[in-house]
Image (cartoon, rainbow, N blue to C red; front, side, top):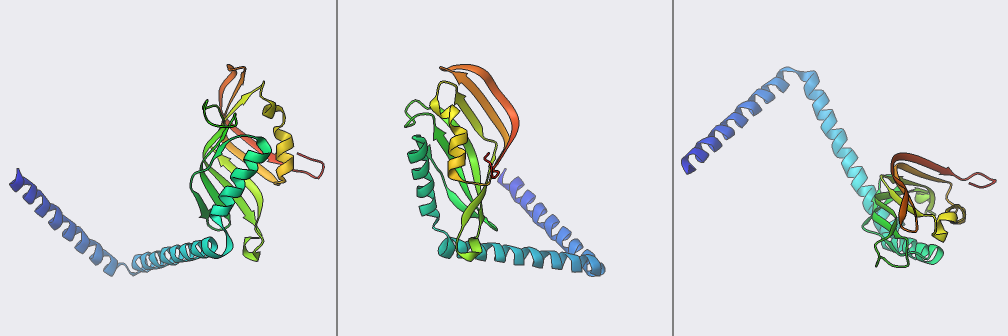
Length: 204
């Protein structure tokens, strides 16, 4: 068995060298393709360096990501009176911040595991970042799960809370909504819903 593996490894290495030699000869004979390939590699490398450099500068000089995470958690706790968990927070090139594993409880804690909103990723789109005065100009939520209880006071006050946070646009894509009353489901897992909440001068 060991001898068979050694032979297979030898054949694989020889085939790889053969294909590599063929590929290099092909590039040598086709200057246009070689030029396009080299330019593509250079563009990709430059883009990667720029993204990483900008990300490092933003994380170290412009944004306190840990402070932003605590500020968001405290706001929800204070204004909604609901428990919230936030996972990793990352800068998203060029002008956004992403929270992972975002959950808001229907209760003051997660003891009963009643989840009001759950999503793996929520994106905060920022304005004024490069002027040193960042503000949230929009929120994008994908693949969220929303569970509303008609007996819960917060279900009738969501619009008021959205007006209070003063964010121009909130977009939810591919959302799943479940509506219940006293624990009994009235509407079960309505899927694929896209919601756009845009603030106008007269209100939402």
